Length: 228
Image (tube, rainbow, N blue to C red; front, top):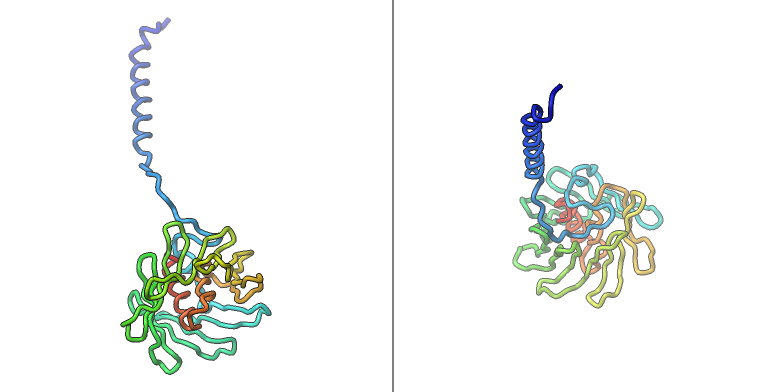
């Protein structure tokens, strides 16, 4: 009959092997340091994966479901048209810039994309008109060229809320059942889309200080860069 003394060398080797496997398993765990992460509303991710699935045309409808705007996407930018397919503006990509032109091909301005912010500039790029900034907590804010706040864009569970600097609610961007809608303070739908679009890209249409071409260009820039 075998005794414990006979098995002891084998048991010792098995113990060492088990300890080695445990150590290797622990060392393979990634080092994760706690850090602050931006809050994102429903339907929005930190990547532009959904942007890559964008169709050839992004339709924006009014409350009565009639088409108000559409962005016709092209390889070199997009074209903004109204509900009757009348051209309103041309958006042309140029590196990290989007050139805004009218139907007569006259330059109206630029949107310049940077890390976590987007600048609206005049036609000569000699004046900074507005800046949309993404905050560390996921919120956004629109400032004028002198860094004066114009709108606060707060992350909400339903999407975003656009407020004045005094915290007066102006618009809400809500995501529900595959539909992104821009609603006024009375909860009436101003604009909506079922096209693949980041909720953050709908917020510029609630910036009343901007012209429709500026709103569309900023929305296009935010959507194209994944909201960051």
